[in-house]
Structures are given as structure tokens and as C-alpha cells.
Amino acid sequence: MIKSFTPNDLVRYIYQEMPEVEQELLMQALHSDDVLMQEYVEMLSTVEFLEQVKLRPSEKVVNAIKKMAHSTGLQKV
Image (cartoon, rainbow, N blue to C red; front, side):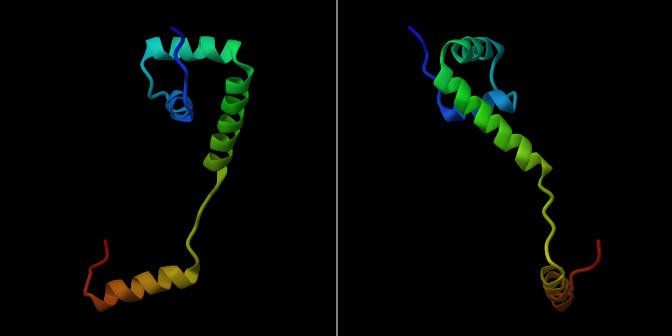
């Protein structure tokens, strides 16, 4: 019986959260299933893009947090 893999399996594979035996099965499936391979390539591309994104809060948000912390008496860390 051939195991069918889901997008969740691909995520686990990309983030190396899959047992070695299952990795081998997935690699075999990737080599024989063009649709699965395309989905994997697209997902990998998305993950690589997301890892490059740098998020920073606006100064307005930072000031609001500081104001709230000051008003509640929280000390600086």
C-alpha cells in the first residue's frame, strides 16, 4: 500500500520533524508524483520567502506598549 502524503506531511518534512523512515517514503513519493513535487517546491519557496521577512512594529505601537507598561508600574527588564 502506498501512503498518500498531505500538505502537513510536506511541512513536517521541510522542518525536519518527520521520522527517517517516513522521510524515505516521502522522498520516493516526490520522485514519482509530479503534483506532489510541485506542491513541495511551492511550499519550500514560500517557507524560504517567509524566513527572509523581517517584521518590526511601528513606532506608534512601541510607544503605546511603553505607555501601557509605565502606567501599570511594570519595571524595565
